[in-house]
Length: 368
Image (cartoon, rainbow, N blue to C red; front, top):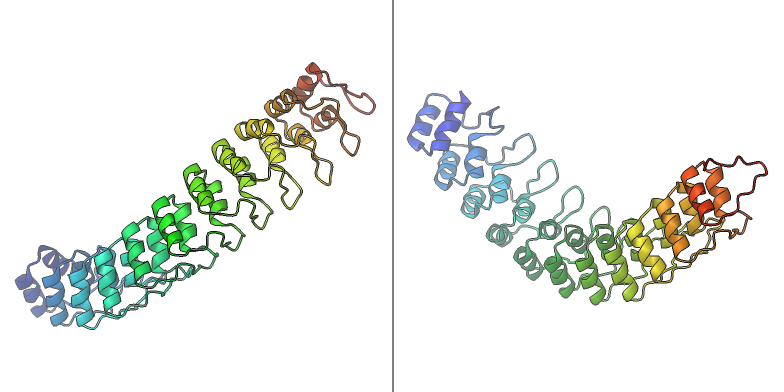
């Protein structure tokens, strides 16, 4: 049975391997428990002598497991550089791909194995080869935070601004995973700091979305465009407000970000914080002078957004910041009218306690 051969390979017992093969065991037999061939197993575990022995006994260096991973890909993924050399000398395909479209170089990069990466590059591996998502080895290394390996890729000529299928560059990936030193290195090597992905998100917008003030500060220092909008019209400040990240929002405001910027639906950051009940960001925006009375085309202000959503704490903060409780919007509605129509009795009662007048025509007065 194949598992006997695998056990002998595991033990590094070449005499037992030779005996089993002479008894008729298939050197390329598939083992269900391991899900691979003896050669793939030996390569995965870095057994140089066993890989040599199996190759000499006719092991197929092109055989792959059910995920399409050959012995070479497996060896590279674990950083077994000498095994990689042995397999290449035995004729293994340098650019063989697994079911994800990754080759040995990509797997070595994803695992952070600099020596193996250099070995593969010296043997002619394509540094710009990409997987099915169009991600290169540089992007994979950047996403994993391997600083020195990223440096190696750049020194070997990797395109720092190449993007994948969703428009992400190595910089996008480094920022998203929080690898600040890698991001700084990429910028030093010419990464486009304001490159947008398919959704229009720059590295600064990504940093704001993952609530990473330190990354935001670094990108601003490096000159990132603080007003660059994504495809929805959201600026980094808008995103920070949406995430209720007051620390990031303050950094952006201190850098001069427009406090009342509008998205594609004419909402301001203040309106969004009120609708979602993002109190930390709301408190910051009110204190920084956001326009309390700005409206969308439909007449929704920050106050009416809070009333529609039933956010009493947001309503309270707006009133404390000076909003006139009986102000009417461009369509003649007050906050109390909107809260009553929306059925939010707690908000209505709060407004009444703060001096609101409730029209009774066509409306039921809520319980107090």
